[in-house]
Image (cartoon, rainbow over all chains, first blue to last red; front, side):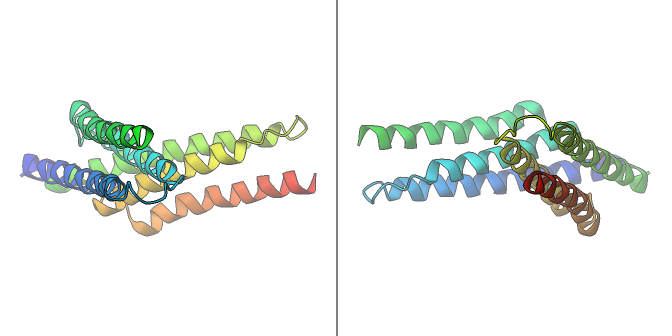
Length: 93
Length: 93
């Protein structure tokens, strides 16, 4: 039972982080779909703020032993790659 | 044993949040101790960023069921009061 509960918290933590990461992924997608619209100078700031928030959640979960550091970094690095693609699309437009 | 482990994660979560809150409290204190020095325009931004990070950690912990919403809000509201005092000291100086 002890291990079961541990797994529950760990699963919950990963699910929550993934849900928050998905929200950022959605923001990036929306921004990509609207590349032809007038550029919104705030989108980078909004994304940066959200990324910072997510990284704080991940650090917290890692410190508690709920999430593996490598797993946590993976979540961030996937989003960072998407953001780089978005940034390049904007700058080459 | 199940309850014990639950308490462990909950205790860890509260300790970590309190440690992060203490860091912000320390930042506020340092700023208060240096009121006579040339005003640093970035201190408010630094504090706001740190407060946002802490609030994201608290939301995360509350969603996982590790921390009580009321307890979490208390941590933030104590810091907000300290920030108000600091802000007033600056504006009345």
